[in-house]
Length: 101
Image 1 (tube, rainbow, N blue to C red):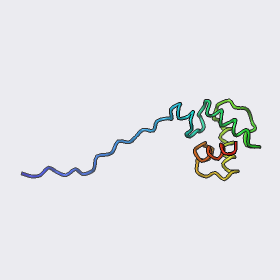
Image 2 (tube, one colour):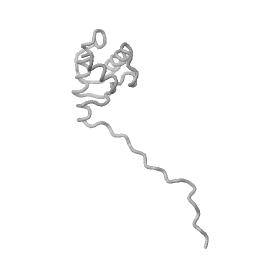
Image 3 (cartoon, helix red, strand yellow):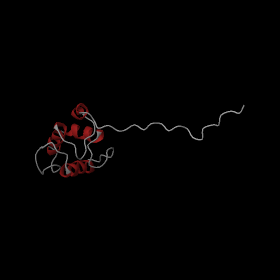
Image 4 (cartoon, one colour):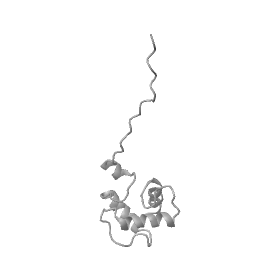
């Protein structure tokens, strides 16, 4: 008898679907980015407002909008932070901002 034919391609591995961070992850750290909202964003706004000329537009409303994105990008540029995407509050930006405020 003949052997069964060999498969022509390996079966595809299932692709993991990225899940948004949980509220607990947002409260305790993790990445904040445009469109996010809540207490963690308010804390970011408050911290940035303590750095002269970085975030002077308005108070802490908890919305990660264009104004906040520009402020995060400005902070990253002025302090030479390169590990996070421009305007995104990731681990490197968080570590630097928290050490200054």
